[in-house]
Length: 137
Image (cartoon, rainbow, N blue to C red; front, side, top):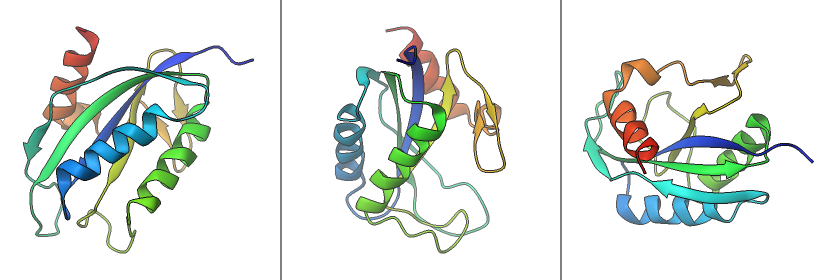
């Protein structure tokens, strides 16, 4: 059986009932197999990043202890996004739900479609604040 590691997952939404999308994502992440809930950060509203004009995001980060590999976790997160109505039509466009693996405590990945730690971690002050909050729990 794989050794459990702590993963930090960013949750964001800027379409529809943003708070409800975050709550549903938290519930779905907490229910993942071979995973135990560790905690959640405060919710923060931020302006959207990127070239597409759109409304502000609600953002939050959660910490989970999981035996899932980064790839398995990413697959589960994509399923959760899809169930929330996420459509990948415009890069950096509006979305009902955006789930990103920000960091694992003891694993790194550098693949074409998955990088852990997330390459934007140092460019997103709200992720740094949320991560610091989770690590202080």
